[in-house]
Amino acid sequence: MSAGKHWPALSFLEHLRPGPGEQVELALLASYSADLGTLGAVLLALAGKDSDGGSGSCSDFVDAVDLLRGKVRVVIQRGRLAQRQRTPRMAAVLDQFVREARFNEAQHSWHAKAALVCLRREDGSESWRLWVGSRNLTECANRDLGLLLVSDAKGKPIPGIEDLALGLAGQAQLKGVAVRKLATRVATLTWRAPPGVMSVERLHWSDGRGAQPLPKLPANPDKVVVVSPFLDRNFLAALVPPGSDAGNRVLLSNLHEIQRIGPSMPVFDELLALDSPDYPPADAPVDDPASEPTTPEEELIGHGLHAKALFVGCGQRRQLWLGSANATMRAWTGHNVEVMAQLLINSELEEGLLALLGSAKPVDHPVLGHVPDPADEEETLLERARAQVAARWDVSQSISGDRLWFRQKDGVEYPGPHPDHPAVALEIGTLCGALMHWPAHQLEVDAEPLPLAELSDFVRVRVSYNGRGLCWLQRAPLCPEPGEARDRVAFVHFLGTQGFLRWIAAMLAEGGAGSDGDWRRAGPRGATGDAVAAWPTWMPTLEDMLNAWSPDDTRFQAIEQRVSRYLPLLREHARTDEAQEFRDLLHRFEDLWGTLCQGLGQPNSRRRRR
Image (cartoon, rainbow, N blue to C red):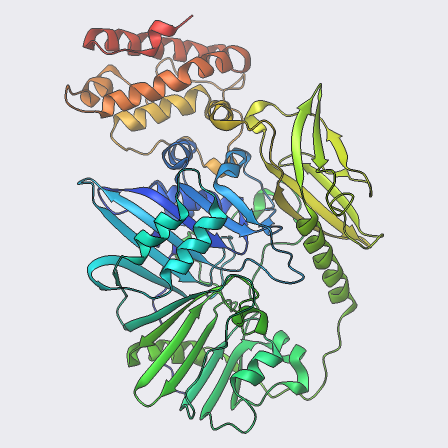
C-alpha cells in the first residue's frame, strides 16, 4: 500500500482557545470519559490562560473558573470520570462544570465527543466553533481524529446540527440556556470546513433510542475502509455483506480486537493493526507524583488507535464518516448517543487516510477462536459492577452534626447503589480522602467532615473483587450547594498571601503570568518557615498600580473588585494559617492599596477592614 501525506497533528486545546479580542460566551462539551486534570486544562484553554501541555498557574486557574462560571458545561457518561493518580486538590471546584448522563451501560452509553463554543468579540458580534471527533477528555495520548468547523457568513448550513445542539444542551442543563432557542440559533448558522473537506453532508447525532439506520453504501464501491479500536462482527457483516462487490475492503483496528472476533471475522482484503488505545489506570493509587505528564500536550502523539472512521470511495466521489462511533451495531444504530460527521473529501485527505493505513502492520485472518484470559474475566466482572453502581447511583452528601453523610435516595428500585455480585465490595470516599466500605443493603455511610475549601460534589468510588479493584469519581451533590462561597474560600486556601499578591501583580501588568506554581500541585500556602524578603520582587508596587489606572479604563475597577472580593477571606486565612511575615506583607499591601484608592477617589476594600 502506498503511503500518503499524514493528516496534521493538532492539539485539541488549540481548537478551544479564543482568538485575540474574543471571550467565551458559552461552551458545551460532550465526552464519554474525562479526568480532572484535563477538565482543568479545558477551562484554562477556554479562558485563554493555558500554557504548554494544558498547565497553568494557580492564579490562572482561579481566573478561568471566575471567568467561565455559568458559561461552561461538560457532559460525560456517569461512572467514567477517571481517578487520576494525583488528584489536584484545587479540582474540587470543577464539580460545577460537570454533569453526568445517566445511561445504563448494560444497554447504551453517552459516547459522543463534541465541543460547541460561542465566542463574543470586542465589537459584540458572535463567532461559533464546533468540534466533533473521537478524543475523550483524558490525559491519554492516542491516535484520534477530529473535525473543526467555524461559523462563517460565506459558509454553508449543516443538516443535523440542530439535533446535536438539542441533545447536548438538554443534557448539560446549564442555567439560563434555553435549549430550543439555542438549537434554533445554531441551525441558522453557516459554517466553514477545513481544507480538503469539500462538503459536510450531515451531522448524525443519535439519541440513544436505537432508531438510526446503518449508512447506505453505493452498490459497487471501489474501496471501503473501516477504522475502529472496537469491533462488532454483526456490524462488519452488515456493512460489507458476503458476496457483495465492494472492491478493496480494508479494516484497521488492533490485534486484540481482531483475534477476539476470531474466525467469524467477515472477509476483508486487508487486515491492519495498530497498538490498542491507552486508557486511564483502572485502580490508580492516590497522590503518586510520578504520574503527572511532563510532555506538553502539543507534543503528545500516541501510538494507540482510538480514531473512528468509515471511508467509501466510488469513482471520484470520496465519502468519509468520522466521529465517536466504533464499528459496532450499538454505536451505528443509535443505541448509544454518538455523533458522526458525514463528509465529502478530496484526494489530499484520502492521502492522509492512506498514510494512517501505511503506518499499521498487516495481520492474518484469525483461524483460532478467542480464548478469554481469566484476568480478562475478572476485569469484565468489575466493569459490569461499575456500570451497575453508576446506573443505580442516586447519592447525595450532607453535613449533620460533626459528620459528613453519603445517602442513597430512599424508595428507588435498589436498596443502595451496590452491584449484583455479592463478592464485589463497594467503597466510597471524599475526593482526596480515604475510602470506606459501604455495606450492602445500607442506604447511608458517614465520614469525617471536610473544611469548606475542600467540599465537592465529586466523590471517589471503588469496586473490588479477588484482590483487584476499579476506582473512579462520581458526582454526589452536596445539600445545600456550596456555591461560589466555597470557590472563594478554596482559592484563598490554595493561593495564600503569596499567590494572591502574585495574582494581583499579574493583573496589574495587564495579563502577565503569575508564577505561583502549577494549579495541579497546589497545596495550602504560607506555612510557618517559608522565608520571604521584606518587599519581594513579585509584590505589586505603587508604580504597577498607577500604571494600571486610567479614568476611562475598567481594568483598575475590575482588579479592585477582585481585591474587595478576596481580601477579607485572605485576611482571616492569614490570621489563622500563615506565618507572621506573610501577614505583614498582606498588611503592607492593604495599606498601600487603600491609600492609592482613596487618593484616586476609588471605592476600596480597605474601608471595610475591621
